[in-house]
Image (cartoon, rainbow, N blue to C red; front, top):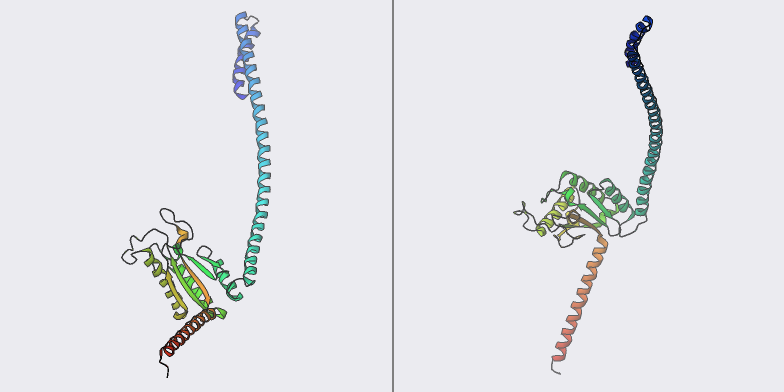
Length: 289
């Protein structure tokens, strides 16, 4: 509106002297009225635009206020959900411990609890199966690519495992360490590991050495390697991380001794039976006296 004041004043300045003089040409008068009407129309248009913009601003302010209220409500819901997730996480951990305490599988209760706790501390590296008494170590997190040297993080978790297996009821268990690979053959380390079979065995030996150096008796640990021949899932082109692993199975030495004794008894029985049969044959062949 302010921008039209100078023009209005100018028109007034022209009209006043003319009117005061009492003699104004009709065409000039009509021209001035035309200018006046034009200015009034522009003023009305600008006023309407201003009112429209003010209405839009009020509407935008209302939308911003509503959005701020929604954001605050969503933040409260997010915090509530966060608390719910934390509670669920705690419940899951408690449930895992309860399951391990049920003494399912071949391992004693104290071992299941300790090994479950160890796996929970290294969730990306260790998987524990209480039913089979097996711990699975992800090779990609235990070894560097194509190598058989246990990296620091792997050494740390294996040392923790050794402390568990060297105490309590775990001292009565033997360890079977099995190495596995995917079907991608060694490339840069081929001189040390000609095939995946070599690499899997060498990695199993490396794990055994870490455990023995951490305090496990060497006569409790047996190693094996399967190369790419025992995959967990179908191998994919370019490598399959899930199949690159080292598995440690725990078996009671009492069960092993019983199996060994049974085998020895069977062999002894078969030997006695063979000897008896042989003796009977000889006696039969002897001439009558």
